[in-house]
Length: 492
Image (tube, rainbow, N blue to C red):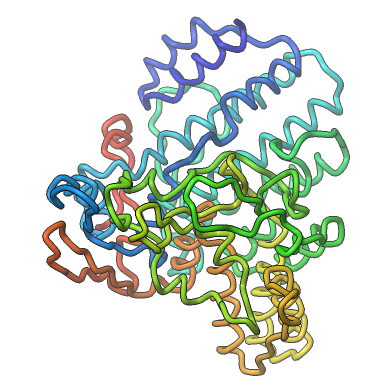
């Protein structure tokens, strides 16, 4: 009951920006008394839960295409609403005043408040210093994770313009209530706080060990995020440093030929995958993710194709010949032919029926490879080029069907060719997992994108996201600005 009351308090604390209401809500606070109760609060209210909005983010990218409406039975007009549901997002034509930005803002700030509450209560509860320090390390890692998401949704990329001047998101670092509105910290300030928190967490989790499941934050997860953050900041040596630390402790990748199933043709089948805790060797941290693209487009079996599905461009990027078969194509993408009329992609898989996602060793190989390539581009150090190719080929060899033919390593000598290869490999490996493609496109310079929208009557219309478009940054929800007038809106 105590944990339930605390959870309700968290919802009240995070539901508004008005400090008077916060003071009123805090009068009913029921405080935890043990570190175990704080851990229960963390697990129940702060960890990610079923984040379907990540797939909505992918609708913005080149990994999704519109197929229009093709019916098995009935009138196409019956399904017009499915097209309309995502049309504005798919066409980058939203009205900022009405754009909720997938409820990301509210959701992540609630979880950040949860981290702050747990850390502020640590000194007041019973428990060993080691357990408290470990729990603080978990909180700092989670808070950094959410701030990294927020600043990459609602701020410009770190490597674009001057991060010291570009507005990021407000930083709230404790659970105290104050009569003030929070303004947006700069992108650089947010990253500086993320870095500070992760480095402290890295030290705390190194010095205070505690066994947890793959569903809880541990030291390897902190190192993965440091590897990612420094990659985004273009601190190549630091990204390599923490990638090395992670891969020295946890280098294993899962060979797809060893999974009990390698994908199939019928929707709803249970598959193994890189996020299957029973079979995968590369899991670092797991949480439940969005189950399939049907959650985005309300796919009906009366349709021969999903109105929105995996793009042909992404599918074609996977090699699929007898001499070179990339098993990710079938493992990541489920193909449905329920009525014998559809053979297009429907579902992206990472596990069996749990639809899990999170942090994996594979990302760290990709992070380190890209950092080596960027160093090679700056210094022409051929050793960095060779190390990058080793990382990329190591990952790919675990993804190919080596029962049919031995994997043939790729080799590039030119910087541009090698970097493009790394970018393509990152897309193939991390597609529809978390929000990687959208964030990567942003830090790649925010290139121009094209989407073809097909109405239910079959009319085709092309929409263009211009290079460096301000719509690479999501608008702050109007509800947040109504609660906090100090929040400035992003240009659209």
